[in-house]
Length: 476
Image 1 (tube, rainbow, N blue to C red):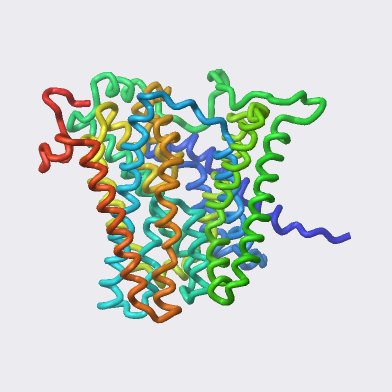
Image 2: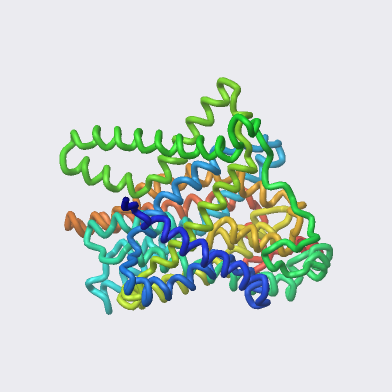
C-alpha cells in the first residue's frame, strides 16, 4: 500500500536541521555571543540544501511554503488563546508608549520602503514591482510568515518570486536583530545607557549555549489541565488550537462566498484575505476566548502549554521560511533587497535609542532592545536581547510588550489591509493607488509623531541632538 510521505519527509529534514543548529550553538561561542536563534542557523543550513541538493531528489520548496503559511496562523491562535495577565493601572500607562515605539518602526519602514522603490523605478529598475517596498516592513516588523503569505499573493499580480523575496527580507532582518542587538548592547555599555546594576548582571551572566545542562534548574514549561487517563493535557490544548483554526477556515470560506457575489472585484479581495489569514485566525481565537470567558470555562486551557505550541510553530516556521528562499530570486532583486534592508536596519538601530530614551521613564534601554529585536526579527529575538540585560525578566518590560501587542495589532490592521494598494496600481493601471499607500504610511508616521510628543512631553523636545536622553544625572 502506498502512502504519501512528502510532508513528513520535509518535517524530518527541518527537525534534523533544528537539532544540528541547537548543537552548533551549544558548542560554538560565536553563535552564543551573538544570540543567533537555532532556527536561524537551521534555516541557513537548509537554504544550501534546498537550493543545490534537494532538487536532485525531487524535493521542492512548495511544501515548505505551505508549512510557513499554516504554522504562522497556528502560532497566532495559540498565543491569542493564552490567559491574559490582568492589567494594572501602572501597566496600562506603559502599554500605549510601547505600542508607539513599535508603530514607529512600522511607519518608518513603510514610508522608506515605498519611497526608495519609487526612486529605483524612476532610475535604474523601471520594471521593478512597486509592492516590493512593503516587503521591508513585512519581513522586518511582521516576520517571515506574513512576508511569505502576502508576498505569495502578490505573485498572482505579476510580482515574480515575491514570496521568496519576502522571506529574504525576513532572513536579513534576523541578522540585523542578532548582530545589531549585540552592537546596541555594547554601545549602551560604552556610553553608560545602562545602570550599574544591569551592567553587573551582564558581566555575571554566562553566555547561553541554548541547551540546559545536566544539573541546571529546569523551569516548568506548563501545567497539566486534564487527568491524563482521560486525555493528555497537550492533546487537549492542541485540539483547541486546531479546532479554532478549522473555525477560522470556515469563517473565511463563508466570507469568500459572500464576496464572490460582488463579481471579479470581490473575488480578488477574497484571494487577498486568504493571504492575511493570520489576522482572521487571531480574531477567531479572540472570539472563542471571549465566549469561553463568558461561560467561565477559559480556565481549562494552560497558557504555558499554549506558549510551547506557539514556540514549536514559530521555530519550524522560521526554519522553513529561510530554507525555502530561492537564491535565483535573491540574485534578481539583489539591489532593492540590499538598499531596503540596509536602510531599515540602520533606521531601527539609530532611531529606537533616541525614541525610547524619551518615550519611557523607566527601563528605557531594556525597552529599546526588545522593540529593536521584534522590529527586525521576531518577538523571540527581542526577548533574547532583553535576557542579556534582564536574565530573569525581573523588569516589567517583557510583559508590557506582550500586553501591548494586542493594541499594536489592532492599530496596524488598516495598514495591513492597504498592503495590496501598490500591487493594484499595476494590475488596474492606476499609479495613484501607489501614492495612496504612501499617504497612508505618512499618516501613520504623523500619528506616531503626535502620540510620541503627547506621551514624552518636554522630554520629546529636550536634547534633540543627543541620541540618548539624560535627565539630570540619571543614566537609566
